[in-house]
Length: 212
Image (cartoon, rainbow, N blue to C red; front, side):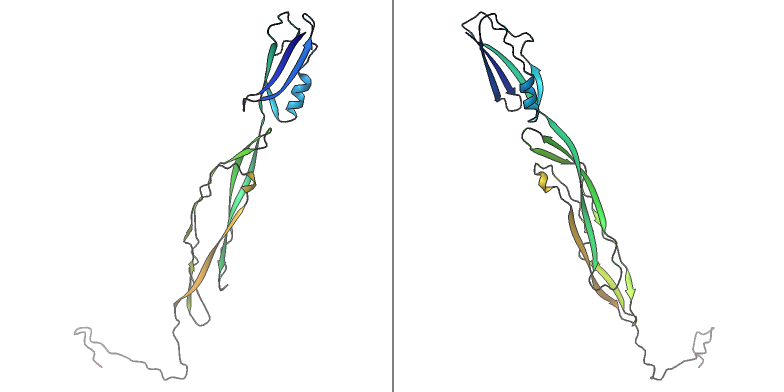
C-alpha cells in the first residue's frame, strides 16, 4: 500500500490545520478532491492561497517515501468602519444666561477583523481636535449688577487616540464645561428720597478761573 498525505497549512501561524491521509495501491487514482475541505475551511474564515495537489492525483510506485502535498491557506480579513463621537456639553450653573449649544465631534475608525480568530484592530482616521470654550461675555440683572461667566476649562484639549484591538472600547464619549457666575460690577444705588444738588459754574476762558 502507498500513503498520501494532504496537509492543510495555516500560513499565518505556520501550523497544520488538518491532514487528510489516503491509502491505496501503486498506480491507482487517488480519487481525491480538495474542494470539500477548502469549502469547510473557508466557512471558518480561511482563504485559499495555493493548491499543491495534482489534478489527477495517483499513488506512485515508490514505497520508501510517502507522497505529501501541501494546501496553503491564510486568514480572510473583513474590512469595515465605525464612527464615534465626542460631545462637549456646556452648563451655566445659575441659569442666568443661555448656555452654548453642544459641540459634537466625529471620527471614523478603520477596522480589520481576522475571520479565523475573530480578533480585530481599529485604527482612528483622525483625532478629536481642541475646542475653544465660547466667551459668554457679561449680563446685567434688574439691579444693574454685571455678571461674568467663568468656564472651568478655557479650552477642551485635543484627544489623540491610539489604535486598539479592543473593539468593544469604540464608544461615544461626553464631557461637560461648566460656567460659574461672578459679579463683575455693582450697579449705582440711587436714593429717590435724598436731596440732589446741581452746580452752575461760570468760567473765564482767558484766565481759566472760575468767575462764580
